[in-house]
Image (tube, rainbow over all chains, first blue to last red; front, top):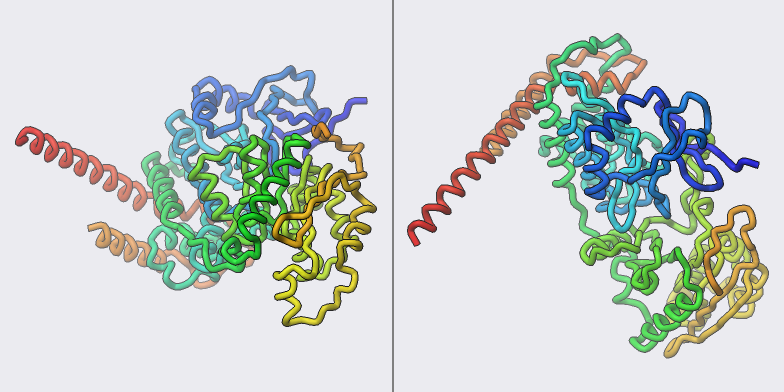
Length: 471
Length: 75
């Protein structure tokens, strides 16, 4: 039976859509996009962008593989191994995605084309860099018309970045609620008075927002050709200047200075690193999720081995520092993301299916849960059984560190609180996780009371087998 | 020089803003139309500002080149 399904998030563009056949990703290009697609390829724009690493490459395959009728061509795009969303990106990741969009629009203009949408969901991270993934976003440029993607650019990129810079870095989470970017009217109300000193913010957020609110439904004469190419270049230049000038200093959050205050000795850290490395060498995974990664110290044990590592933490500063380090060192295998395990990304958008949850993007070959179990079980009161049940959905293999109650960090916690956690012990931990995992190795960390486990998931994920581990 | 330009642009924008906006807003909001119209309002400003920027860059590049050559010839 033909195993095909349409991507539930790909339906707004009538020019084409994305679908899966036997879990391989394809894009159907409809006949309505024929002229623009041929121009994209024929003008050389496609090749220019692919050669510069700015746009995903694709292969044309036979239209016998088409999902519906009305097809012009079917293409198989280059695979992005892990999909992430703008509300999971750090400040610099979102800023780089914004600058990429503008860069592509400027190059497209040189070839006589223009982007018809500027959604942040058109960008993914691949080998440590942002890359544009929507090949059907290009249309032939018509001089005289304003940029149709301007509103979307301001809502998806300029709004959240300005809010993160001028108010609070956590305001990017508004992107979880507003699927088409943060409404300008809301951004305008939240920005402080000093943003009125920034001419670009005034133009593209404050006045832009007021113009939106004041406009009625009366028809606009769209045949006026007063928006010249020079005006468009000026618009793109102004937006680029606005984005470039936004900055954020990643310090002062709860976990920013974590590695300066931990209770590990040098020997303990070295031994823990060796153990994690030896477990990874045994498993030889293709993808690792490091849960509670902070600045990615242990994530790099995996990524330095050429393993694609998704480095997840809930602290914005830690993730930002992690990404800045990855940029400085040109690291290709690490993807830092901001995600709180207590409230991980869920299904969003139309029918709650447009953007998929963290669980649905798995299972990972290996998940690492180092120095995190006590935050979940004690700080957040999640029973050990429920933690094991959740991890059971995430990975084929689990490297997990158990922190006993007599560890000095936990003792500090209980110095101010009553100890109500009677069920928190090595025995309870092994019993809870034993219902979902088989322990394959257990090692005590030198100079520490903490224990590192290597566990295999009893769940074989039959419906969605990604299994590549050799152990 | 750049600050004067920014202040001038801000004043022009405020003036245009006061002329264009009606006293009350309509219940039906069409965000697409607003963005379209706003770009038409600032079209001239963007074109002028961008032209000035390119012109100034060319002047700067010419002057840097000129003084570098003079320095090299002097040596």
